[in-house]
Length: 191
Image 1 (cartoon, rainbow, N blue to C red):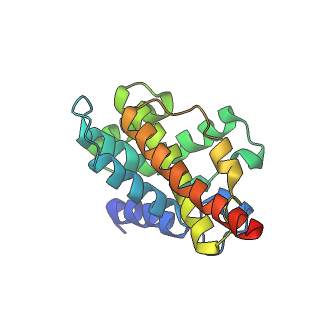
Image 2 (cartoon, one colour):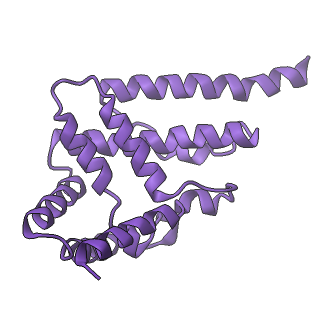
């Protein structure tokens, strides 16, 4: 089998790796890692920030969780140290990129490292997108399940982590929409 085909099949595993946080919270039909990465790439695509290299942001979003095709989605609740998580993911990225031409290997691995080390404005923006997308997904799960407020810990885990003006504004919209859903059942109980 060609190495490109092996690479594409490995990365395709991301379609079948459920996001661990949702699994632990017993969300029915939790999104996959690739679902998450896809919406992050779309979020990067629609940024209006002219100071950011939009193409680079999209590429970072598509690469940032690629190692999870091999190591799985390691969540904070798994009690694996940041160092060990990084070591496993680094090994996985080396394995994945070995299947590519030298030019692609270098490009994809360097994008992953840039994200991991938060070494550019684009990487920091995509990190915020990562957290924001998770909160947006929590909002959607609460709406789908009709359980307003159930996934509060995902909101709590991102408190104070947003500084990019567009993401701050999007988070404000998410919180406003969510709060109307949380308040509505309380108002119904009191009427």
